[in-house]
Image 1 (cartoon, helix red, strand yellow):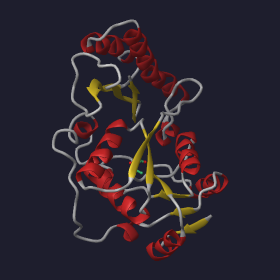
Image 2: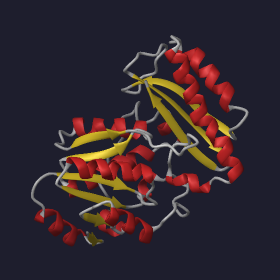
Image 3: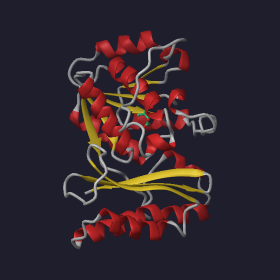
Image 4: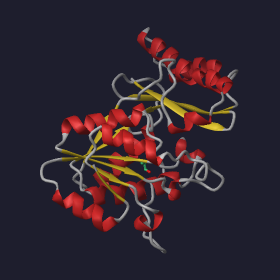
Length: 275
Ligand code: PAF
């Protein structure tokens, strides 16, 4: 595995690869969720590139940029064992210069739900993903469905800017107790973790309701809220949208995402279900 922090040596290594390239951009603190993306990239491509970059422009003032978990040594080992060919660990000045061009998330889809709670987050996320996709010149890039709105906005950016990369959505990976894997789960105390399970429990209940024929978003949202409110510290939203993030009054099978975001203690968690 080639490990580099410099753009020049990254580009040189990248250019030495023949065949197809799969790319997994991450912010590090790698877990089974990331590994599932890397494994899929390994299966579907001749070469796999992973980047680890805690991107400052997608964190809002007062968010957890400084305490975001950083585990470079462990991450390197995980990448090595997973058969990654090139690991890019750029510093901020390798990615950004002063007075940058910026990318703006779409005014509606980028500013509802996560975008409403974290205004500007998606601008920064799209900006760095555009850079990383251009740097890697990958054939395929792998993103988890857990960050559903992020995934849909990246697909839109690729469409809107006529980029050639194929975005591959990957299934959510959960712990045995149902909690969706996230690098931020390490912030949870054992008691908070127990309460955090209400997110996946509410989604499971929503799935059951849909299976039994319920289609009304209002009914599903009310049942989910009833499960969540006694457990979470602050319920941010329960939303039912189509795959383009337009709100739905009724669930459309094959075209619906049910989303939840809540704070448990100080930790903000998101989870969702694609039906
Ligand atoms: O999902 C993430 O870890 C980040 O948002 C990403 C896509 C690596 C961009 O910084």
